[in-house]
Image 1: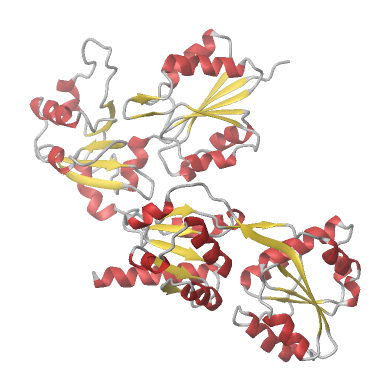
Image 2 (image 1 turned 60 degrees about the horizontal axis):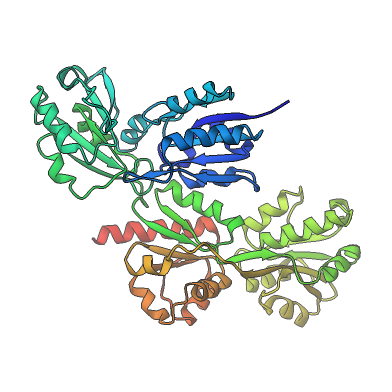
Length: 510
C-alpha cells in the first residue's frame, strides 16, 4: 500500500515559533520539503536528517521555479511513494496559491491535507502594535492583494466598495503598487488623512514599521523594499499605546553567538525573548577524545574514587554517556561525592537524579579548590576530573599540591567548527552586527581564526564584545579585543543580564 501524502502547510508570518503544532508535525515526518522564500529556514532544522529539501521561492519577481512546474513537482514526489510537505509562508489559501496546488493534486489522485497557518495580515500588525479590529474603531476587516495576476485583463478589486465599506484593509505584496493603491482609495472616497502602516519583515527581529496617512505614506516608504504588508485604517492610531514587540530591550540588535551548535539554542532563545536578532556562528564542536581508553579505565575502577569533579556540562554528558555504554549506572557511583562548577553543570548532574555535594560560589577553578578545602580534607582523597582536552591545568595541579591523588583525563575534545560562510567579517565592518559573544577561551581563539582578520584590534570599532567570565575575558583581551560586556555571574543568564544592562545604559546616553 502506497503511503504518499502531500501536506500543504502554512509556515506562519516569519517568527518560526508561530507555526502550528500540526505544521511542525508535518515538517518532522516529511521525506521531501518544498519551501518558499518567505519560510523561515529555522523551521527546516526540525526535519529528518536525510530529508530532501527543494527551494522553489520567488523573490522580487524572479522565479526559482514556475508555478506549473511546482505543481508537477508535488505530484512527481508524491508518486515516488513519499511524504511531501509543501511549506508556504503565512497560510496556504491566503494569496499562497495553495488552492491551485490542491486542485492539481486532486486531479492526479494524490491525497493531500491543508494545514492552516497564521497569516501576515493578522500577525504582522499585531507585532507592530496594531489590532486589526477594535470596537472603538471598526468591526470590519478585509484582505486584499496588492499585486494581482498580471495576465488578467482588468482588476477584480472593486475600489468603490472597499474604499469606504471596510474599516481595516490589509494589502499583501503591495509595496511596488502603493502609489496606485493610495490613489484608488482616495479617489473612491477614503479620506487622505486615514492612518496607514507599512510593516516589513513582520514578526521577525528585522521588523520595520513606517506609519503615515494615505496622503504621506508613499513618500515615507520610498526606501522600503518587499516583503511588506500595508494596513489601512483608524486602528493604526493604537500603535503608540500597543507597540509591545519593537519596544523590547534588544529589538533591532544583531548578536552573534559563538557557542557550539548543540548549546547555542539555549542562549539564542534567551536573547530572542528580549527581541534580538541572533546569528548562530558556532566556532567549536564537541567530539569524542582521540582515545576513550583512559576514561573507560577510570569508569571500570570508579569505586576507588572519593570525588568526581565536573567543570562543564559537556564533561557531565560525556562521562555519563560512557558510563551507560559500559553497562553501568548511577548505582555504581554510590559513596562518591560530586563537585560541579556553575549552575548549568549542577543542573546537568541533577538530570541523572544525583545531588551535588560541592558547588563553589564562583565558577572558576580557583574557587573550586577553596570550596573543596571547606568540605573535605584533600590530602589522601582520590579525585576524578573528566574534562576537555584543552582544560586549564590549575585545578589538578593545586589539588595535587594539597596532597590529593588526581586523575585528570580527556572526556571530550573541543575542536574548531566550520560554520556556514555568511560573510560575518563583512557584516561587522558594515555595521550590521552589534555584538559578538564568547562563552569560553576556545570560542575567542576559533572565532578570530575562522573570520581570518589579521588586524584584530580594528574589530573593536565595529562591534561590542561580550564575555561570560574572567578567563574568557583575559583570552580575548590578550588577543587584542576590547571586552565591553562582562557577565557578573559566569553563566549564560549572567551574560544575558550583562548584555541587557549594557544596552539599556547605552540607550540612556544617546
